[in-house]
Image 1 (spheres, rainbow, N blue to C red):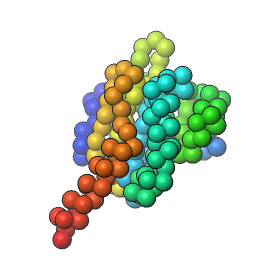
Image 2: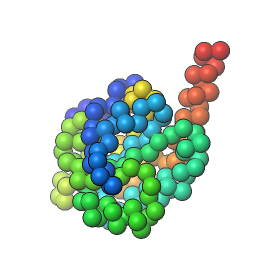
Image 3: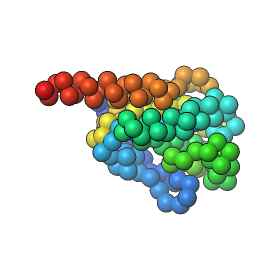
Length: 163
């Protein structure tokens, strides 16, 4: 399971999302920059803090043209409770097959109990990886401020390159 590098096309990953239906990454996020977060589970305080930070930054992210989606192995009921408790409005995927996701993306998997370790990707509007952040434990993850800064920097540089 190779790690995704900058410039790699994010693999097709279809996730079940709260509210019914599915979200296929990167296709469903195409046309804008996107942040895709894999998190350990609703029980993880670090994950809760990260998800809440992205929700608090909702307007700034939208203003910068950045969409957010998150995914874990949690079941639908657990995810529904987490979304309500934290006021999460971005797409939340549930019931992920940790090993299948890891095979596609290189994410680390905790062996027992099985869950995805914190992993974050920033994707460009065409679905290519701009940056990937892999953690093998509880800490080491993307922050909304860093994502916004990175996307602004990329946009300024691409504008300067075409001017």
